Length: 104
Image (cartoon, rainbow, N blue to C red):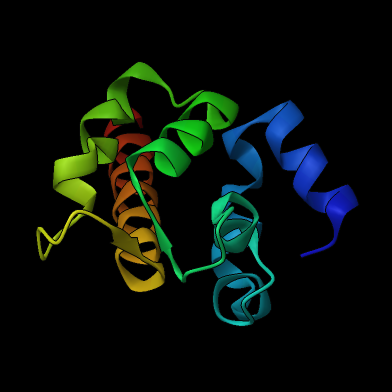
């Protein structure tokens, strides 16, 4: 993901999330949104790196429960892998879709 797209995402919020999810490059190329927060480049987000992501993302109240570190860290190894991160993004998108459908 380009720096310009990433900055736009951080500035304007979650409406850009579908573009991120649909972009296999952003999710799998090692240069997507996940790697921006992996400051020590070990391939995982620790709790400090994850907090940095959460502060930038400004997650809406109704989706915050999905983003608890312990909930994202499915294997409970104390670090968040790219797959765990992507799985949580997908969960949020599914919840957004369900919420949107229920509103109609």
